[in-house]
Length: 254
Length: 204
Image (tube, rainbow over all chains, first blue to last red; front, side, top):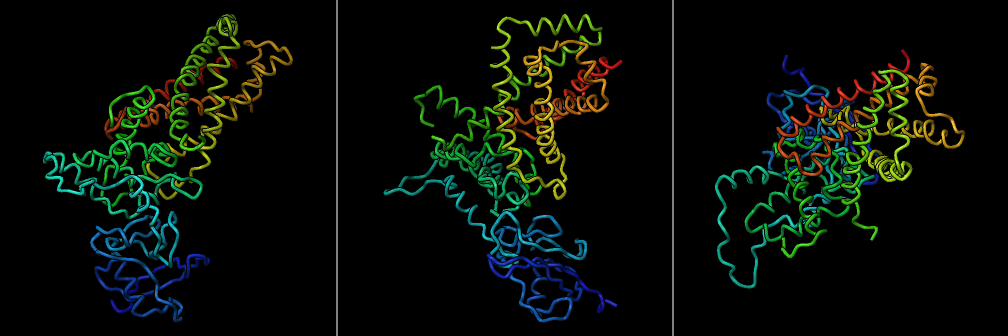
C-alpha cells in the first residue's frame, strides 16, 4: 500500500535569470518525515517529471538544513518559508514550490538576495572593533540586554519579510524590515552605538524607514519570530528625536 | 536637493492627516450635526463657519493646501504598494489595504464635495444651506455616495491615527499598538455615527 503512495509537487521553474518561468509537475514515492529539501533531493536523484519525461534536475539553494542560514527560502504553498523546516507530512498536496518574487531568480528556486547584503553594508550592520592598535576590551553589556539583543540577532537575512511586505516591490526602493531591525540591534550594542547616528541618517534617506506602511506582514511571517514591527516603531521614535535634533540644532554628536 | 526628501514628505503626510485635516474633519462632522436640530440650527451653524473672518485664508491654509499635499502624496504611496491580502490575510495587512482604498474613495468624494459646495457655489452663486444638502441627498445615488464617502473618510482618519502613532514612534510595543487599534476603531464607529446620522437628518 505504501508503495503506491506518492508525493505530488508543482514547481515553478526558470532556466536562466532572463528566461520565462514555467510550471513542472513531479510525483515522487512517499517516505515518512520528508522535508521539502529531501523531496527536492529525490527529484535530483531521478529527474523525471510526473509525465514520465526526463527533465533537468530542479535547482535550489541550501546551506545549514536547520533554519539558521536562510539560503533555502522559497514560496511553499503560497507562504515564503525555509524549505528545510517545511515538513512534507504537514503540507497540503500538491505541494507548490516557487521562488520568492521580490528577488531576481537565478535559476528555478534559487534567488539572488544581494540587495539584502547591500542593505546591511549600507546601514553598517556591524560593530567597529578594528583599530590600528589594540582598543582594549569594550564596555560590558547587561545580561538582560544581551538576551534581548540575541532575539534580534537571530535574523538570517532569509528574505521572507521582504517577500511578505507589500511595500517592497519593483515600484519601490524600500530596503525592507530585516536591515532596519539590524540597525536597532547594532545601535543598542554599547560599542555598536558608536555608529548610531550614521545608521540613523542612512535609514532616514530615500527608501529607508519612512517607507514602512505598517502592514505588519513581516512580523507575522518571520521564521525566527523577530519583533520586526517593534524594531521599526522604536526606530521611528529614534528618528523623530534625531530629526528634531538635527533641525533645531544640537552640539551633541549622536 | 530632490534626493532624500522621502522621510520629510512621509512624516509631513502623516502629520497633515491629523493636524489640520483630521481636526477639520471632526469639527466639520460635529458642526453638521446641527442638521438634526432642524434647518434653522444648521443654517445658523453653517453660517457662522462659512462667514468666519478671513474665511478664504483659513480654508486655503488649514484645508486646501494640506489636503492637496496629503492627497497627491497619498495617491503616490497607495500606488507604490503591491497589495497581497489574498496571500497574507492578517488583520493589519487588511487595515493597510483598506487605508489605501478608503484614501482613494475619500479623494474622489472630497473632490466632488468641494466642487459641489464650494466651487459651484463660487461660480454659480448657489446658496450653501440646509436645502441645498436636502436637494443633493434626495437622489438615492448621491445619498449612498455620501454615506460611503463619509464612512471612508472617517475610517481613513481613525486608522490613520493608528499609523500616525506608530510612524512617529508614540506606540512601540505590540500591546500599546493593540490598545490604540481598539481606541481608533471606537473613534471610527463614533464618528461614523455622527456623520451618518447627519446625512439621515437631511433626508428625513
